[in-house]
Length: 121
Image (cartoon, rainbow, N blue to C red; front, side, top):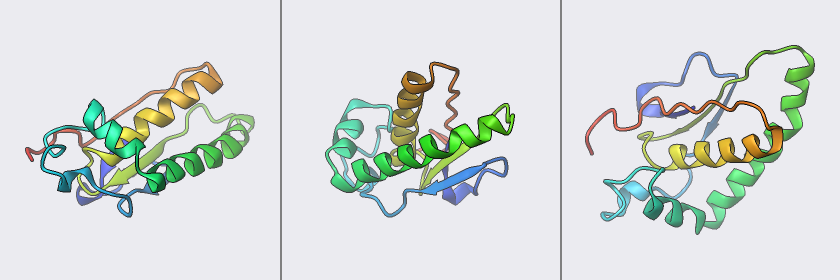
């Protein structure tokens, strides 16, 4: 689940990751109207080394700990990824994680973008 910290942390999250330290496409005029689902934002974020590193580290962390939750008979796990406005960084990273874990696990991975386009830019 992606979310905007400015609207609060999701109360049902099992894990929360904060992306506010990463480069923000909001401050690039051409990228501001787009979301993390759009190609221009995706290209920008995937070209930032620290963004790629954060993605890899979150993937590694989740890959290590998800099996423990599964063996504890948890039927679901909510991973919340937040940025300032919930439009760019968190949306892109959630989409990347979902694609990765769909491929790795072969099971259902649900995606929710809680604050996507909640407010006009």
